[in-house]
Amino acid sequence: MSADDPGVARDDGAAIPLTPAEAQALAERVARGMWERDRASQALGMRIERVAPGFAELSMTVRGDMVNGHAICHGCLVFTLADSAFAFACNSTNFNTVAAGC
Image 1 (cartoon, rainbow, N blue to C red):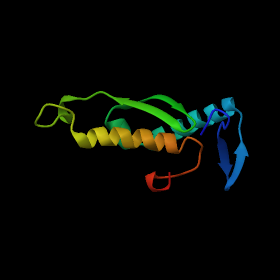
Image 2 (cartoon, one colour):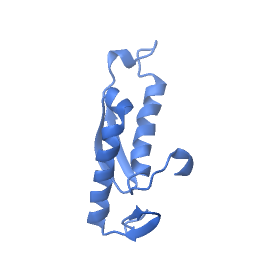
Image 3 (tube, rainbow, N blue to C red):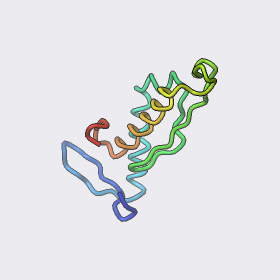
């Protein structure tokens, strides 16, 4: 997605062009809706730092129960953080998708 393509809303499969402000507002609404149902990301203490059409930045504080035998964050938790950020970015235009379709 480029700066010239602010994103689209999808309603019953129809693409509706949006202004940049509308696309941003949509991305924020979608993120709030997804967050309300994302018990896994919440349980791990993730936070949505920024979201925009096609973009999401999440953070997570590594707790003591998240470290492996080398005293660093377990790789599966790093991957889970990346997977959650990817999900918020891919779904930011309100078109339900999973990694296989993004």
